[in-house]
Image 1: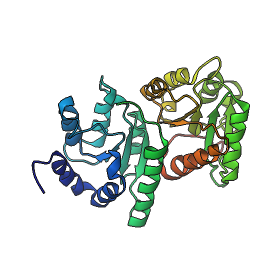
Image 2 (image 1 turned 90 degrees about the vertical axis):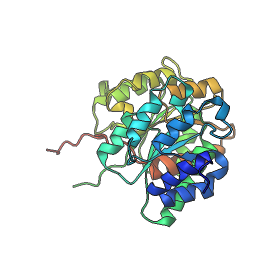
Image 3 (image 1 turned 30 degrees about the vertical axis):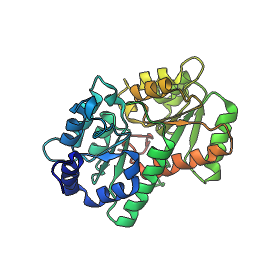
Image 4 (image 1 turned 180 degrees about the vertical axis):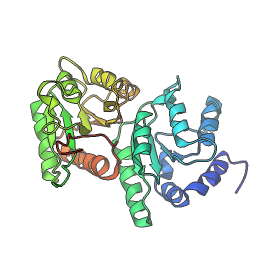
Amino acid sequence: MSAKSPNSAINSRTQLHSPDVFRLLVDTVADSAIFLLDPDGIIRSWNAGAENRTLHPFPCVILLDIKLPRRSGFEVLEWIRSQESTLKRVPVIMLTSSNHHIDVNKAYELGVNSYLVKPSNSSELEQLVSTFRAYWVELNQGPTV
Amino acid sequence: MAEPALPTILLVEDTSSDAALIRRGFDKINVLNPIVWVKNGQEALAYLSGLGQYGDRIQYPLPALILLDLDLPEMTGFELLQWKRTQPYIRRIPVVVLTIDKATSAINAAYDLGANSYLVKPGDPEEIIRIVKSIQEYWLGLNEAPKLVLRATPDAG
Protein backbone atom coordinates (compact mmCIF):
# COMPACT_ATOMS: atom_id res chain seq x y z
CA MET A 1 0.00 0.00 0.00
CA SER A 2 1.53 3.31 -1.05
CA ALA A 3 1.83 5.86 1.69
CA LYS A 4 1.65 8.56 -0.97
CA SER A 5 -1.91 7.83 -1.91
CA PRO A 6 -4.02 10.10 0.29
CA ASN A 7 -6.88 7.65 0.50
CA SER A 8 -4.80 4.63 1.35
CA ALA A 9 -3.70 6.14 4.65
CA ILE A 10 -7.29 6.89 5.56
CA ASN A 11 -8.53 3.54 4.37
CA SER A 12 -5.95 1.51 6.22
CA ARG A 13 -6.93 3.12 9.49
CA THR A 14 -10.62 2.81 8.82
CA GLN A 15 -10.14 -0.88 8.19
CA LEU A 16 -9.04 -1.24 11.77
CA HIS A 17 -12.56 -0.35 12.87
CA SER A 18 -14.81 -1.97 10.35
CA PRO A 19 -13.03 -4.16 7.83
CA ASP A 20 -16.12 -5.95 6.58
CA VAL A 21 -18.23 -2.84 6.33
CA PHE A 22 -15.50 -0.99 4.56
CA ARG A 23 -14.73 -3.76 2.10
CA LEU A 24 -18.39 -4.13 1.22
CA LEU A 25 -18.88 -0.43 0.79
CA VAL A 26 -15.89 -0.16 -1.48
CA ASP A 27 -17.07 -3.11 -3.52
CA THR A 28 -20.58 -1.80 -3.77
CA VAL A 29 -20.33 1.93 -4.02
CA ALA A 30 -16.83 2.66 -5.20
CA ASP A 31 -18.19 4.57 -8.17
CA SER A 32 -20.37 6.85 -6.08
CA ALA A 33 -17.92 8.96 -4.12
CA ILE A 34 -19.03 7.67 -0.76
CA PHE A 35 -16.19 7.64 1.69
CA LEU A 36 -15.98 6.02 5.02
CA LEU A 37 -13.49 8.17 6.82
CA ASP A 38 -12.23 8.49 10.29
CA PRO A 39 -12.38 11.92 11.98
CA ASP A 40 -8.91 13.00 11.08
CA GLY A 41 -9.49 11.79 7.56
CA ILE A 42 -12.55 13.97 7.14
CA ILE A 43 -10.91 17.00 8.59
CA ARG A 44 -7.75 16.55 6.57
CA SER A 45 -9.76 16.06 3.42
CA TRP A 46 -11.90 19.14 3.93
CA ASN A 47 -9.08 21.35 4.98
CA ALA A 48 -6.99 20.30 2.03
CA GLY A 49 -8.40 23.12 -0.08
CA ALA A 50 -10.14 23.34 -3.43
CA GLU A 51 -6.98 22.64 -5.39
CA ASN A 52 -7.02 19.10 -4.03
CA ARG A 53 -10.65 18.36 -4.83
CA THR A 54 -9.63 15.99 -7.58
CA LEU A 55 -7.87 13.87 -5.02
CA HIS A 56 -10.31 14.61 -2.21
CA PRO A 57 -13.73 15.21 -3.74
CA PHE A 58 -16.61 16.15 -1.49
CA PRO A 59 -18.57 13.06 -0.57
CA CYS A 60 -22.32 13.00 -1.24
CA VAL A 61 -22.84 11.06 2.00
CA ILE A 62 -20.72 10.42 5.06
CA LEU A 63 -20.88 7.16 6.95
CA LEU A 64 -19.62 7.67 10.43
CA ASP A 65 -18.79 5.26 13.21
CA ILE A 66 -19.15 6.42 16.83
CA LYS A 67 -16.32 4.59 18.49
CA LEU A 68 -13.21 6.00 16.91
CA PRO A 69 -9.78 6.72 18.28
CA ARG A 70 -9.00 10.30 19.37
CA ARG A 71 -12.22 11.97 18.25
CA SER A 72 -15.57 10.23 18.60
CA GLY A 73 -18.11 10.15 15.79
CA PHE A 74 -20.23 12.54 17.85
CA GLU A 75 -17.42 15.09 17.88
CA VAL A 76 -17.03 14.78 14.12
CA LEU A 77 -20.77 15.17 13.59
CA GLU A 78 -20.84 18.23 15.82
CA TRP A 79 -17.89 19.67 13.93
CA ILE A 80 -19.53 19.07 10.55
CA ARG A 81 -22.81 20.71 11.59
CA SER A 82 -21.04 23.74 13.07
CA GLN A 83 -19.26 24.63 9.83
CA GLU A 84 -20.04 27.88 8.06
CA SER A 85 -19.49 26.29 4.65
CA THR A 86 -21.83 24.02 2.70
CA LEU A 87 -20.12 21.11 4.44
CA LYS A 88 -22.57 21.54 7.30
CA ARG A 89 -25.43 20.16 5.21
CA VAL A 90 -23.82 16.96 3.92
CA PRO A 91 -25.92 13.94 4.89
CA VAL A 92 -24.27 12.02 7.72
CA ILE A 93 -25.33 8.49 8.52
CA MET A 94 -24.10 6.82 11.66
CA LEU A 95 -23.04 3.23 11.10
CA THR A 96 -22.16 1.77 14.43
CA SER A 97 -22.41 -1.31 16.57
CA SER A 98 -24.24 0.58 19.32
CA ASN A 99 -28.01 0.55 19.42
CA HIS A 100 -28.05 2.08 22.87
CA HIS A 101 -30.84 4.64 23.33
CA ILE A 102 -28.44 7.26 24.61
CA ASP A 103 -26.25 7.00 21.52
CA VAL A 104 -29.18 6.98 19.10
CA ASN A 105 -30.80 10.03 20.68
CA LYS A 106 -27.52 11.91 20.94
CA ALA A 107 -26.82 11.36 17.25
CA TYR A 108 -30.23 12.78 16.29
CA GLU A 109 -29.78 15.68 18.71
CA LEU A 110 -26.52 16.52 16.95
CA GLY A 111 -28.24 16.44 13.56
CA VAL A 112 -27.50 13.04 12.10
CA ASN A 113 -29.60 12.23 9.03
CA SER A 114 -29.99 8.56 9.80
CA TYR A 115 -28.69 5.94 12.22
CA LEU A 116 -27.81 2.41 11.19
CA VAL A 117 -26.69 -0.43 13.39
CA LYS A 118 -23.98 -2.70 12.00
CA PRO A 119 -25.37 -6.19 11.62
CA SER A 120 -23.42 -9.07 13.08
CA ASN A 121 -23.39 -11.31 10.02
CA SER A 122 -22.21 -10.67 6.50
CA SER A 123 -25.43 -11.46 4.63
CA GLU A 124 -27.31 -8.89 6.69
CA LEU A 125 -24.48 -6.49 6.08
CA GLU A 126 -24.76 -6.98 2.34
CA GLN A 127 -28.47 -6.31 2.60
CA LEU A 128 -27.78 -3.16 4.57
CA VAL A 129 -25.30 -1.89 2.01
CA SER A 130 -27.70 -2.62 -0.82
CA THR A 131 -30.61 -0.84 0.89
CA PHE A 132 -28.31 2.02 1.86
CA ARG A 133 -27.13 2.44 -1.71
CA ALA A 134 -30.62 2.25 -3.20
CA TYR A 135 -31.80 4.95 -0.83
CA TRP A 136 -28.94 7.44 -0.42
CA VAL A 137 -27.26 7.08 -3.79
CA GLU A 138 -30.10 6.37 -6.14
CA LEU A 139 -33.24 7.84 -4.59
CA ASN A 140 -32.34 10.65 -2.23
CA GLN A 141 -31.75 14.15 -3.59
CA GLY A 142 -28.58 15.32 -1.92
CA PRO A 143 -27.65 18.91 -1.17
CA THR A 144 -24.98 20.89 -2.98
CA VAL A 145 -21.79 20.63 -0.95
CA MET B 1 -50.22 -6.39 28.49
CA ALA B 2 -51.04 -5.41 24.91
CA GLU B 3 -48.44 -5.53 22.15
CA PRO B 4 -46.73 -2.17 21.70
CA ALA B 5 -48.41 -0.28 18.88
CA LEU B 6 -46.57 0.29 15.63
CA PRO B 7 -45.00 3.73 15.34
CA THR B 8 -47.09 6.42 13.69
CA ILE B 9 -46.13 8.19 10.47
CA LEU B 10 -47.15 11.85 10.16
CA LEU B 11 -47.96 12.79 6.58
CA VAL B 12 -48.01 16.56 5.97
CA GLU B 13 -49.53 17.07 2.53
CA ASP B 14 -52.04 19.64 1.27
CA THR B 15 -52.96 17.86 -1.96
CA SER B 16 -55.66 15.30 -1.20
CA SER B 17 -54.94 13.21 -4.28
CA ASP B 18 -51.24 12.95 -3.41
CA ALA B 19 -52.03 12.07 0.20
CA ALA B 20 -54.43 9.38 -1.02
CA LEU B 21 -51.78 7.97 -3.38
CA ILE B 22 -49.18 7.84 -0.64
CA ARG B 23 -51.57 6.17 1.78
CA ARG B 24 -52.66 3.68 -0.87
CA GLY B 25 -48.97 2.98 -1.52
CA PHE B 26 -48.42 2.07 2.11
CA ASP B 27 -51.54 -0.09 2.05
CA LYS B 28 -50.35 -1.94 -1.04
CA ILE B 29 -47.10 -2.95 0.57
CA ASN B 30 -48.90 -3.93 3.76
CA VAL B 31 -47.50 -1.27 6.02
CA LEU B 32 -49.64 -1.46 9.13
CA ASN B 33 -48.23 1.59 10.87
CA PRO B 34 -50.89 4.22 11.52
CA ILE B 35 -50.56 7.11 9.06
CA VAL B 36 -51.89 10.42 10.30
CA TRP B 37 -52.56 12.93 7.54
CA VAL B 38 -52.51 16.66 8.22
CA LYS B 39 -52.98 19.26 5.50
CA ASN B 40 -50.67 22.08 6.41
CA GLY B 41 -47.75 23.16 8.54
CA GLN B 42 -49.94 24.70 11.23
CA GLU B 43 -51.79 21.47 11.77
CA ALA B 44 -48.51 19.53 11.83
CA LEU B 45 -47.21 21.97 14.45
CA ALA B 46 -50.38 21.49 16.50
CA TYR B 47 -50.04 17.72 16.22
CA LEU B 48 -46.37 17.68 17.21
CA SER B 49 -46.95 20.13 20.06
CA GLY B 50 -49.94 18.18 21.34
CA LEU B 51 -52.30 21.16 21.07
CA GLY B 52 -56.05 20.75 21.44
CA GLN B 53 -57.27 17.26 20.59
CA TYR B 54 -53.67 16.21 19.82
CA GLY B 55 -52.89 16.44 23.53
CA ASP B 56 -54.32 12.93 23.70
CA ARG B 57 -51.12 11.01 23.00
CA ILE B 58 -52.89 7.67 23.13
CA GLN B 59 -54.97 8.55 20.13
CA TYR B 60 -52.37 10.87 18.58
CA PRO B 61 -48.93 9.51 19.48
CA LEU B 62 -45.82 11.39 18.44
CA PRO B 63 -44.73 10.10 15.03
CA ALA B 64 -41.55 8.11 14.47
CA LEU B 65 -41.28 9.59 10.98
CA ILE B 66 -42.57 12.75 9.28
CA LEU B 67 -43.23 12.90 5.55
CA LEU B 68 -43.30 16.56 4.65
CA ASP B 69 -44.44 18.43 1.56
CA LEU B 70 -42.83 21.86 1.24
CA ASP B 71 -45.39 23.91 -0.63
CA LEU B 72 -48.11 24.15 1.99
CA PRO B 73 -50.70 26.80 2.77
CA GLU B 74 -50.43 28.96 5.93
CA MET B 75 -47.18 27.48 7.18
CA THR B 76 -44.76 26.08 4.62
CA GLY B 77 -42.70 22.96 5.05
CA PHE B 78 -39.61 25.17 5.44
CA GLU B 79 -41.26 27.08 8.28
CA LEU B 80 -42.24 23.84 9.96
CA LEU B 81 -38.64 22.57 9.71
CA GLN B 82 -37.42 25.84 11.19
CA TRP B 83 -39.82 25.56 14.10
CA LYS B 84 -39.18 21.85 14.65
CA ARG B 85 -35.43 22.20 15.03
CA THR B 86 -35.95 24.47 18.04
CA GLN B 87 -38.19 22.00 19.87
CA PRO B 88 -36.70 19.66 22.47
CA TYR B 89 -37.26 15.95 21.71
CA ILE B 90 -39.43 16.68 18.68
CA ARG B 91 -36.37 17.89 16.82
CA ARG B 92 -35.01 14.34 16.84
CA ILE B 93 -37.87 12.94 14.76
CA PRO B 94 -36.65 12.23 11.22
CA VAL B 95 -38.23 14.29 8.45
CA VAL B 96 -38.30 13.03 4.87
CA VAL B 97 -39.22 15.83 2.49
CA LEU B 98 -41.53 14.58 -0.25
CA THR B 99 -42.24 17.28 -2.80
CA ILE B 100 -42.45 18.04 -6.51
CA ASP B 101 -39.89 20.83 -6.14
CA LYS B 102 -36.58 19.76 -7.69
CA ALA B 103 -34.86 23.14 -7.38
CA THR B 104 -31.37 23.00 -5.90
CA SER B 105 -32.18 26.02 -3.75
CA ALA B 106 -35.14 24.21 -2.18
CA ILE B 107 -33.09 21.06 -1.60
CA ASN B 108 -30.25 22.98 0.04
CA ALA B 109 -32.62 25.07 2.16
CA ALA B 110 -34.40 21.96 3.40
CA TYR B 111 -31.12 20.34 4.49
CA ASP B 112 -29.94 23.59 6.07
CA LEU B 113 -33.14 23.58 8.14
CA GLY B 114 -32.52 20.03 9.29
CA ALA B 115 -34.40 17.79 6.86
CA ASN B 116 -33.06 14.24 7.11
CA SER B 117 -33.71 13.31 3.50
CA TYR B 118 -35.23 14.85 0.37
CA LEU B 119 -37.28 12.88 -2.14
CA VAL B 120 -38.95 14.18 -5.28
CA LYS B 121 -42.52 13.10 -5.90
CA PRO B 122 -42.65 11.43 -9.29
CA GLY B 123 -45.05 12.75 -11.90
CA ASP B 124 -46.32 9.26 -12.61
CA PRO B 125 -48.72 8.26 -9.82
CA GLU B 126 -47.68 4.61 -10.12
CA GLU B 127 -44.12 5.58 -9.36
CA ILE B 128 -45.22 6.77 -5.94
CA ILE B 129 -45.49 3.12 -4.91
CA ARG B 130 -41.78 2.68 -5.59
CA ILE B 131 -40.96 5.73 -3.45
CA VAL B 132 -43.23 4.58 -0.65
CA LYS B 133 -41.61 1.13 -0.76
CA SER B 134 -38.17 2.70 -0.41
CA ILE B 135 -39.37 4.81 2.52
CA GLN B 136 -40.74 1.69 4.14
CA GLU B 137 -37.57 -0.35 3.54
CA TYR B 138 -35.21 2.34 4.68
CA TRP B 139 -36.96 4.36 7.38
CA LEU B 140 -39.22 1.72 8.87
CA GLY B 141 -36.92 -1.23 8.19
CA LEU B 142 -33.27 -0.31 8.35
CA ASN B 143 -33.06 3.01 10.15
CA GLU B 144 -32.83 3.13 13.92
CA ALA B 145 -35.38 5.74 14.99
CA PRO B 146 -34.76 8.09 17.91
CA LYS B 147 -36.11 6.84 21.19
CA LEU B 148 -38.99 9.02 22.27
CA VAL B 149 -41.97 8.39 24.41
CA LEU B 150 -44.18 8.15 21.34
CA ARG B 151 -47.33 7.14 23.10
CA ALA B 152 -48.64 7.89 26.53
CA THR B 153 -49.05 4.70 28.51
CA PRO B 154 -51.94 5.22 30.93
CA ASP B 155 -51.03 2.19 33.01
CA ALA B 156 -47.32 2.98 33.20
CA GLY B 157 -45.79 3.61 36.61
